[in-house]
Amino acid sequence: MDNINKFSTKPQIAPSISNLLVEANQLKQGGKLELAIQKYRSAIAFFPKSAWAHYYLGETFVAKNCFNRATVCYRSAIAFNPCVAEFYNQLGEVYLKKDQLDKAITYFQKAIALQPNEPWYYQNLGEANAQKGYWTACISCYYDAIKLNPLIVQKYNHNLNIKPDDPQTIQVNNPIYIVGCGHSGTSIMLAILGNHPALYPIPYESSMFLKKEPEVRKMMSQWDSESLQEGKKRWIEKTPPHIFQIEKFLKYRPDSQFIIIRTYARIISREGFLSC
Image (cartoon, rainbow, N blue to C red; front, side):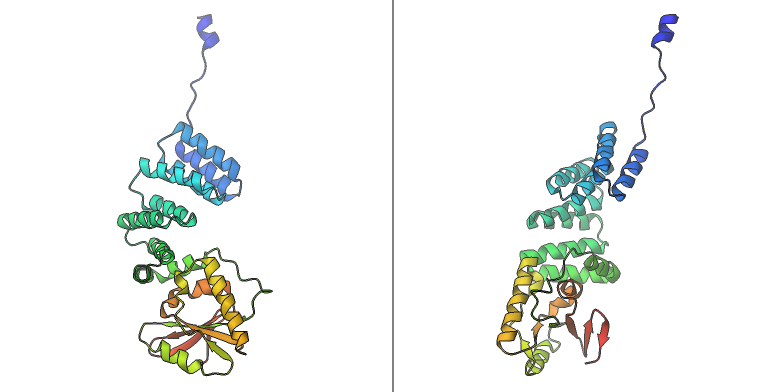
């Protein structure tokens, strides 16, 4: 009996997966990413098939810009639970960041197949198609996203991590974009405004929404130089589908203005509508 008492111990209680994930998520939200990673790994050690533990660990690696590790985590999450649309979406976002566009498109499509009413997924798919230069496909995705929930689209664009151009390098602070529906008079508007002595009209549709960030900045800088060479104060560009990119272009140059054409025209800037 003494020997039994000598080696007897209280049974150890395994932690619950929910408690571990709550603690890890609190660490992540508090910016303690390394501690969060340790906690998620502890959760996975106890519950190796917990899809959400792998998913949250992937999110933490994304916050640290460790995209390859995040890819592994999201793939594990999908392997253990292939029915969660957000797992595919997040993996697609990682591939988008890694410029692996074909893979990004594939996973965004899988997310939409599982959850076809989520506008964020269509917006992501639109961005990936845009960077591939797939005009028709990306426009279709943008339309679908807006039809589902324009407020989510606004939030998506608001969250884009685009820094404004360096004020020291900007030569034209308040460019003008003509946007709107196709065949609504955007070309006529450009022709009319292009006759103004202070405005330099870009003589082609730039389709900047199909370009990547460095290309967009390079094009705007080039137009700045061309405007000044022509003795103009501002340039004006016309690509109707840029109506989907107003928030994005305002991030590059907050003083940009947009002429939106349907059956009438209004000028919009960050401050709101201005009189024509």
